[in-house]
Image 1 (tube, rainbow, N blue to C red):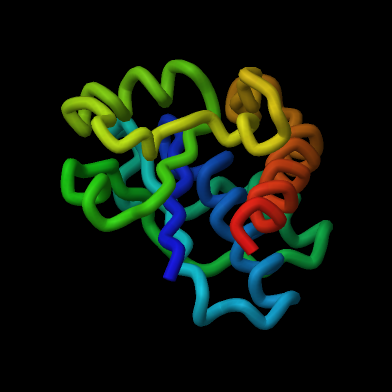
Image 2: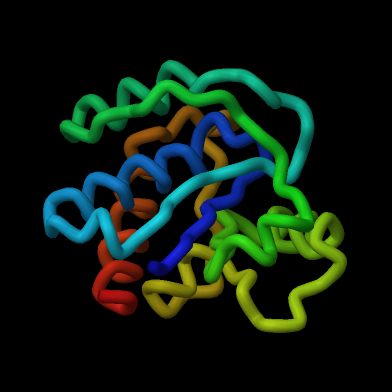
Amino acid sequence: MIKVLFICHGNICRSPMAEMIMKQLVRERHMESRFAIASCATSREEIGNPVYPPARAELARHGVPCERRGARQLTARDYEDYDLLLCMDGMNVRNALRLLGGDPRGKVRKLKSCIGSDGDIADPWYNDRFDIAFEEIDACCRALLEELA
């Protein structure tokens, strides 16, 4: 089983969008038994809070179900539990490495690396562009699934 953890700052916008998109792509291919997919935050600001309503609405616009869940923070245990830890931006990478105490096995990388980019997925909390975040995350998740399948 391949275990994938998506990471962003608060775990209410980008990383849960990636989690739900990836789960939907895996379901469409009937590959649920091959993957464990989750998401978390590098901060404690939103712990316990649900997916942000505009993120839920964007997922719904694309027919992607959004599970009920509460935000949680990344832990050192996650490094042992997951095969890939995919961050939305460079700040998330730095904060994840700090929380994890490093990355000796090379599991932490930016999500956009899946499409051959070192770029960031901008936080729609600040720019209100949930449509662009969805498009970028969807493209990355599709490429990731091709890479892993």
